[in-house]
Structures are given as structure tokens and as C-alpha cells.
Image 1: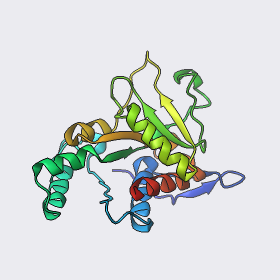
Image 2: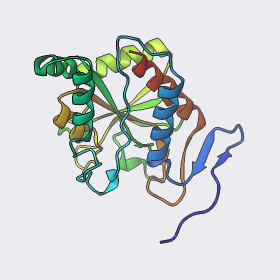
Image 3: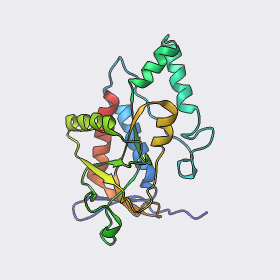
Image 4: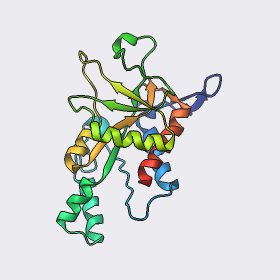
Length: 219
């Protein structure tokens, strides 16, 4: 296997870009861990993050999003808290989840490949991803909840919608939402050159993702 050994770099005249390998999806993992470790969370809630294996190859493994890992952990937490099966079901129904993964910015060289009514800018805000065929798990109630959280945290949002005449990628959001029964919203930081050896995103959006996830985990 060949690997890019160049260190990540801040680029742009005002330091507005981050150039690095594997921004998708180490950026989201870093933001989630940072938010969980440094946030001021409610004492009556149980903030939780899942960093799954094998997301790019289908998620069907013992430690992927298609496994029972998250469900088992939630079940153990519920049992430790003395909850019965009905209580545990109510716990999931009252929970909210965010699926954080890289998002495609509108490419300046190929704007025709994007929905003209939903252009996505680098450093334009955290992206909320929508798809009527549930390639993303985002739906109306989850969107309303996330917008309320983002407004309270002062984080701007953008909306990504794939053109109807082109195939749409997906995330682990629909996989975990279906397995857990938890309202889920798909979000991410916009970037260019996704899955290339060197990817690029905005430095301010990276900070915004931490702020947003911190507010989500704070309850």
C-alpha cells in the first residue's frame, strides 16, 4: 500500500483552508472526541459517541455500524441504571443522534454536477445532508431539533441536496438509525477532493463542527 506522508497544513492567504489526508472522516472523529472530552454535559443525560470501523466498505462487521455494538452498549447502560426493557425503549425514543461525515462542497470546476438551488461553500457553515430516499437519515423533526441547537450555539448551517438525476452517496446514518430507532441527522464539514490522497476543507468549519457537537452532547 502507498501512503501520503506529508503532514497536514494550513493553507490560503488568511489560513482559511486545511489540507490533509483522510479529512473524511478523521475530522468528524476528532471533533466528536474533542466535544465529548471538553464539554459541560448535563448530569441527567448520557452523552455518547461511536467511532465505527469499516465505514467505507459497507459497515457489516463486528465493530461496524451494521453490528450490534451501539445497541449492546446502550442496553448495558440502561441495565446499569436499573431500567427495564420498556424504559430502555423510551430512552431510545427520546434520544437524538448526529451522523457526522464529510460533505461535498460545490466544485468550482464542475458546478453543473450540483443542485443549483443548494450550493455548498467551504467555510460556509456545517452541512446538513438531505435525501428523500433516505440515503441520509435526516428528516423533518431531526432537522428542526438540530437547527435549534445550532442557533443556540451560533453555528451557521448549509443544506446539501443531491440532484435528483444523479446517484447519491450515503453514510452510516441510515444504518444506525434503522438499527437503534433513534432520530438521526446527517451532517458534515464541506470539502473538496474527497477520497483523494489530499483533501481540503475550511478551518473555520472545523471549529464550528466542534462547537455544534459540543452543544449536541450537552443536551
